[in-house]
Image 1 (tube, rainbow, N blue to C red):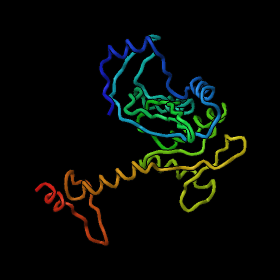
Image 2 (cartoon, rainbow, N blue to C red):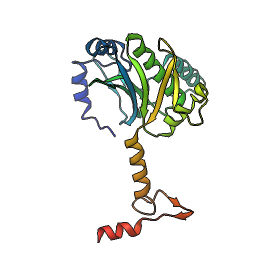
Image 3 (cartoon, rainbow, N blue to C red):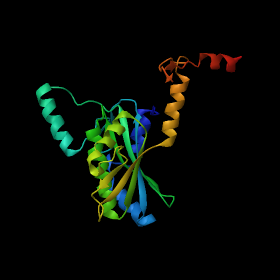
Image 4 (cartoon, rainbow, N blue to C red):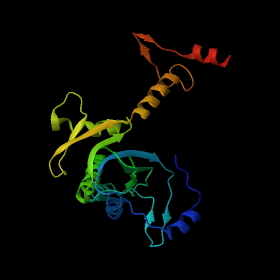
Length: 227
């Protein structure tokens, strides 16, 4: 979880820099001019943030959920019928690019989110891809952790190639449509396996792993290690 230092410090920093939410088109163009057109991967991650309201130097309110134009119209319609307030962002969705053959690393889009859905992620991801392809980058793959939203997002592309396991999508924003590969980050998968092993019958006791129809309990292993 990201813990902000203080509201006062954020306000001071806001007078020295202005980082827009959504896709930063100017920064994408700047990166392309500096590093040149090349093959890149788009990394997706959603981080937990502390809720709070902060005003920047232009009077804009920070902390609310950022949506695309279509999402905003839908949210306004729902709000007008439910008479509910705009929800505060509880997470920060970050989309970053990394050069496959260079040291390029850059955050190109950020969104404040609340109850992110696969449909929301779909529209935002392809918006980023469109802007990257427009300036000369070639998006070859998407890398994310194994969160359920990311898996649902991948499955939304099942009809592109009809594979039994969806591991690629059609990049229609390229000059010639080509595959864009969908990758679950190995490090996150290993961490998930480790957490499942650690918490099966011990520690948090939040998992019940079964091996060959026999429930796995690692309490004995922990006791041996501690003694």
